[in-house]
Length: 124
Image (cartoon, rainbow, N blue to C red; front, side):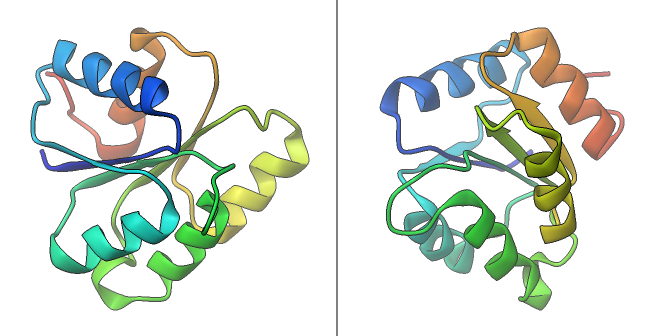
């Protein structure tokens, strides 16, 4: 599966990429913020997008809104991975078009479960 990982933290991107590799997913492209992600999403098709919320230039919520406004990305599964744990934040992200939500810090098992819930049949 082709996956786009969006986070301004190089360390967090590395953690997510390693977790995905441990789940057998190695076709992963990284973006440093929402603006970078939009550019990469316009150039390629992704089967899953994992994005942080708090980033410079274009935050994760803005990224989700922009992606959902494009036909190409209306149905692309998007999981928000963030420190924003308040219920209101989760509701706001879901209303914007996020399919699932992970609060940092997380375990590889949590990542796997959320991806399975989101894309179905993952890792089987």
